Length: 349
Image (spheres, rainbow, N blue to C red):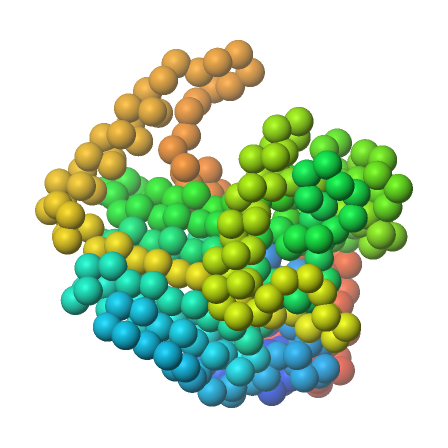
């Protein structure tokens, strides 16, 4: 399995996407988000997704150069139709717009529909945190194929329905939560398949409702379980709320339609901290809270307490120096695409 420097991966992704029809700007935005996911240790949302995106472009499920249309808006709210553009591009622009509105309205929110995969959801709330605001985002895959069984069920009826919240602070790395409301993201199941690995018990049930550690059961009619194990009703409840915010509030609906077209519906909210209290005071108190938590004596089997988001920051700093491991299955697909597009020499494959 090759280990590649982040800038080289960005170049590879950008050239391949442009070869498939993306503009340079679109390709750069997608490559930046994808590599950030790899650096944070979320390989399921990194370079492994690029062959899938190119396949979706070919099917017309993702549309390069798609218009960004505001369907409805007020001083504090926006409804965006992404016209099947790259989810990274549409959601990044939507978050920028929502941040701008929160500067004058104190609180702003937006919904997005008809866009491609948005990748690692944390990227967008972190944009708000860097602007001195609290950012929130939920995402749902619309009426495309589902992966997660409701608590107590054995048939998939929900998406992995992630939620992320980011908070401004004076910490070295961003403080944020980014989590699927399922036991695992679907991409992590597929990553285990690509790496010929088993998965932890409690992630997946087979089509007949048995717990399994074999990730290939997923593509044979299995379903991912809700977050929480024996307390999975909690993850299930969160998932339903995300479904409502990102699927129903956006107008995407629920269930599955025959086309199975991936359609990330998103809800975003931004809270301008300055509307509630002085920003620097708040950031310092958040920092002190994080340090207070970190100073907790570790329990058996642990060496340290981390604040939310710290492990991703540590991994990012490590992989920026050491490089990112790309599994052989993904690297083979990348090489095949490079040969097909005639760009192998450009990428020093």
